[in-house]
Length: 338
Image (cartoon, rainbow, N blue to C red):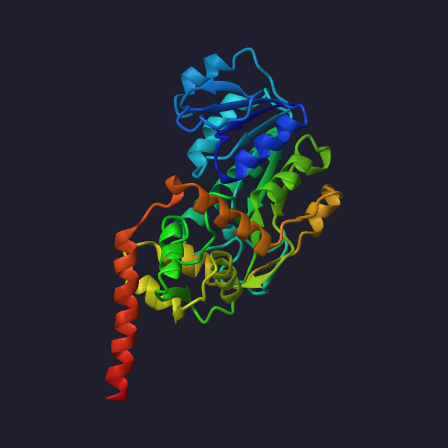
């Protein structure tokens, strides 16, 4: 198989890259070269900014691919560019959308690919929906061979998966645990969530590559394991060898008192209970099974981060904010009790 990845070094794509090379795929990565230091041997690099359409068109002029996958497209204009570049040059174009595009709030907590797409809380999700709409139009009207893939919360050994401030403050939360400081969990911690280790996601994704039955389809790829946020934070604390000191705070309160977009990433995503039905994926990729349990994956992540100080980046602003939120709640309880 001959494939081109736009990006190829992120949490999701790096695992796919590694497994494809182990399987002997002729793999090209098109990126700016800023995160290529740890790439496995065997990758063919096309160093360019995908937004420089003229330059990219020249670099791929004599190339054709079985699969092209864009891991860094977020708005329709970027897919319009991809269509101009790759229409007629690939047998399959794969777009990485997001499971946050599914109906929010859900009318049924069990999510299938038939669940409506709607998210009034998060612009990121609405943009992904618009991207999907554009690609479906090109498939229906022009035969552009698309496959839409919807990841949910996917993580690797470099980032601890969290609910509050999960994309930025992962080490700071671990540090608070190690210092026995209270840690914020949104809501009452009992909402259901699904975490997927990136190597498991990669197995499902690779199974869709070159798969004629995946053309024109939308598929989510997640683990079948469902846990609560309380369990997630307990597993993190246990992996660190400490006792969890949890403080539960309503998601609405967190959104109201933060400069961060908790309306989107929390109210529009992680505050909701989700359970994914992976029947469609398993029908298309019969061998798919997610084998990394949450406790196993988080343990690997904690061990890796503790062994690599460069990933222990403090976020003092977030730390101070946590103390303020918790202090405000304590003051409210004292005021009400008199």
